[in-house]
Length: 169
View 1 (spheres, one colour):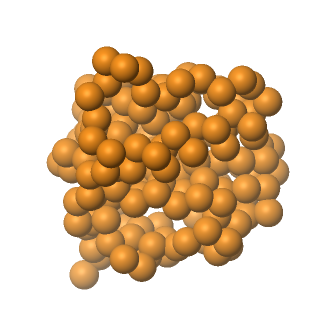
View 2 (view 1 turned 90 degrees about the vertical axis):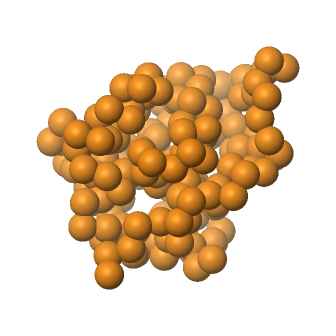
View 3 (view 1 turned 90 degrees about the horizontal axis):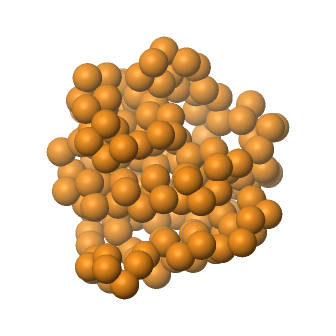
């Protein structure tokens, strides 16, 4: 794995949503002290497992931006987001430039980025304990009380490796 790790300065990515809105990482960090980037692709079963929990985080801490960054085209991304009831922005990495800048080899890959632009947490694949840690980090950053991310009814594995990321070559 070569994904960027904690303490690394995040690349200055700028992407467009499926609706055509432009998003800039460092512009968003001026307005919000923390952001979560979630790289994903619709055909990845681990991304499908993780996406509903990202939506729970978004609903629990609405003042923390979460961006889904899709390696798929607009139609596939739109259908994927709709299938899982995603309400946070889904951005398109059509030429995989952000995928390359973040050094992705697997999806899902999550990056929690602080106000200084440094990566505070990296999660590759589905790691329940890391997602619980992320939940606490988002609660602290948002100023809200922590809400449980997983319920007793959720039958999720402790760890599930991700899928191979698309590559531009």
